[in-house]
Picture 1 (cartoon, helix red, strand yellow):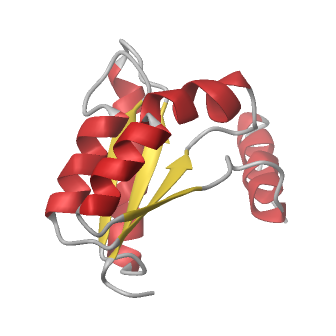
Picture 2 (cartoon, rainbow, N blue to C red; picture 1 turned 45 degrees about the vertical axis):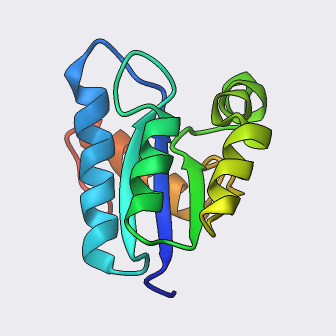
Length: 132
């Protein structure tokens, strides 16, 4: 992946600090993988940076593409309506396009073999056992 692509993780936002901590840790893991030139976090509500602020921040870091990915388990009202409205696609997309930046909006996590493995591991851990 080219260094000119920024990945923006979108969290819901919470008054509780672990929501931010989880997203920051995921972003750090992704930065270490070095697939994307820049990795940033943002929040839909109750926390900062906002999605709009984070997009502007990434654009200032000379990315030509920003991929926005909601860090949500499933598609729902937030991922299909609320976040796209917060992105202000028409207005924000035009502003960023003038700066040479294209926006791409990804899907939430959904179902995936890797997520099933994590859930299985968590269930075994709750039982005080390890997966064999």
